[in-house]
Length: 263
Image 1 (cartoon, one colour):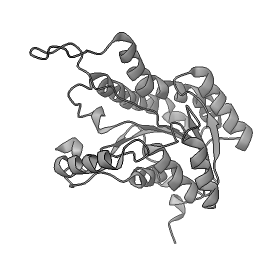
Image 2 (image 1 turned 135 degrees about the vertical axis):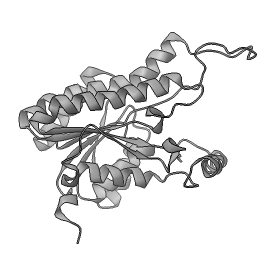
Image 3 (image 1 turned 90 degrees about the vertical axis):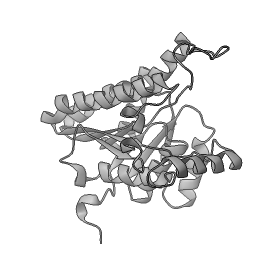
């Protein structure tokens, strides 16, 4: 029998960017553990198949199409969850993306295209602004209820940036600091705000079998624990952070990265 503090049966959870990759891993674990999950995504391409998968497994979820970088969509997401359940226990901001380009052309790299204004805004919006909008949308409900948990999915790049990913690292670091600041603001009202920072997790929905194998080989060479992560492992951390067992944790980042951030 698991400790009662780890039981999420009946907890209501919203997960953005949930249709594939890390989001899918989080949704699967939470739904299998008895949570009521609303999964959102920008498109239906992977979201409806996920809904069908979870229904077939006996762990049905709710789904909603929404753009996490638009305030009206995040407001609509929160309202939809409230219409479904009357309250929201956990809100997980999981949207993110990267563009691998240098900020300016580097000496000796003629022909390299630097990051454009539009690309910079996209990367910052999809990694940082989405978290701000999600928190702003759900904040009044949780603060009024004096109870709730916000979890931002950042990245090991929050602390350890990489070449050609300046915007991604800046966005994830900003998201990490957003959580710390909000954790201080919202602590007096019983609302916690934390980050989960994954390392190298392949998305089989977005990679060919050959690319997936190459991804795993690179991770085996670069990650201290010698392998890529499994999506379920982020889901298990989200399970802990969504449970009452994490009630005394706020304003922190938990790295699920096989040791990348310390290597």
